[in-house]
Amino acid sequence: MHWATPTARLLPRLLTGRTHGPLFLADRRAPTSGRRAPASGDVCPDTGRGRLSYPRAEYLFKTASAELDPHRQGWTLHQLRHSALQHLAQAGRTAPELQAKSRHQHLASLGRYVHLGEETSARITAEADPVQRRRPR
Figure (cartoon, rainbow, N blue to C red):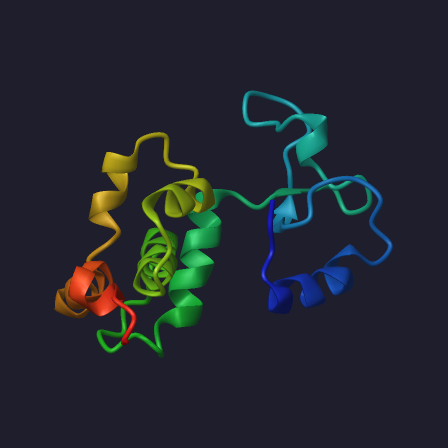
């Protein structure tokens, strides 16, 4: 897993004193028996709380982002991922680079994330223009 610098700087605070167990935990203790009991690796050995689930993480993110969202509904984790890929594409990253970052198996599936627009088309055309590449004499 690769972390950007701001995230990497925050991680030591979360990791302090932890040697094993999940990093992001649910609010309550995990069931210890029955069908819903998680695997032992998904339970914090110190607190007994289970690993934070994706639906719960998404709920927390939507709640936290609601006041920033113009529609006041909050954003989903999928929208966050979409936005990150779109910004990378606008910054000029290639499709294989986006594929490596997003872990998509097929380049075609990146199409729904990347909407580059007119400016990108103009830049690519200008960069590929043979007249522009000639050195002045």
